[in-house]
Image (cartoon, rainbow, N blue to C red; front, top):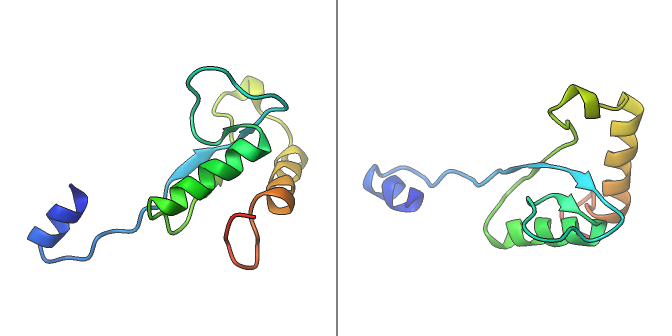
Length: 96
């Protein structure tokens, strides 16, 4: 749909750059779950799937959106470091 509109307007197709709220769990989540929620392996698979769909970048959002769940800046940094060490290659930007 977006590509058709871009072609009609003779404009480039915009890049797919989704935002994922990241919630790491120790166990698999049952039922429906948003992309970015679950085990490290599941989040890795989510990012790989987004790449297959054409995402050029993904914003990894560690903000829980509710003040009661908000941790410290150190908690956010540890989560991002976990993702860099286990999921995202910081040199290539690809999925490990």
